[in-house]
Length: 290
Ligand SMILES: [Zn+2]
Image (cartoon, rainbow, N blue to C red; front, side, top):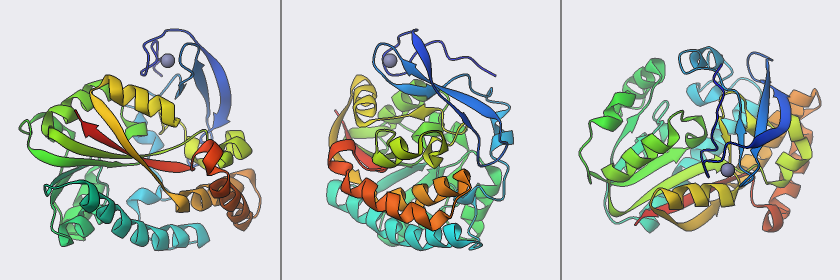
């Protein structure tokens, strides 16, 4: 395990325990989320060392790498995914002029496939070999391993997308600085992350599925991600709600609580209504490279 000394947002070394919770998805091991005493940012601490984290991803249930439709939650996930893929591409079309796209954490390549169909010259970066093979074979898109991030030319892409990926990145500031070099001046970054300030996070507390420790290293609120990116040279341009995530995450949280997962639909609904105050369960942040 690695102990994190410094808050990645503000650099402070003072933090205290905020929540102790299980890895509900895979190992059932206990982890701790701490809160920075200076800026209030929350992060998992300690975290598995980078050579051990693979162990926490090895599950048939890790559905970002699976397309099976077993079970109600996975079925819903797949239906919603197909719809949100179309939405994502249209958000980008409305905000970006160029067509050169890099999808960081491209997984099985479903998003890239849709983006390519809509005229983007996209390719992906994905650490998982099996997911990369799936992307090539099934979705016919190009994806490379992580080293590619450091061999790309500067100013070579118009838009970088990270769909629920930022919260998994170990060397966050280093990789973000590199992404900014790759991005053309005025280029855009689309970053989807869970929002731990949302109503469903408050309701489920340690059972909230989007804490997803230890895979999620960071637990952002809007002010945290805006501050981090501003410090890295990006301006927050827009926040887009991901309304389906409230339902999906709440249903999974009900499952973790050992209750009937459909009840999560009610909490998801309330979360979307209360979003004016707390923000949505997951949000897409659109940043401009200044
Ligand atoms: Zn801090």
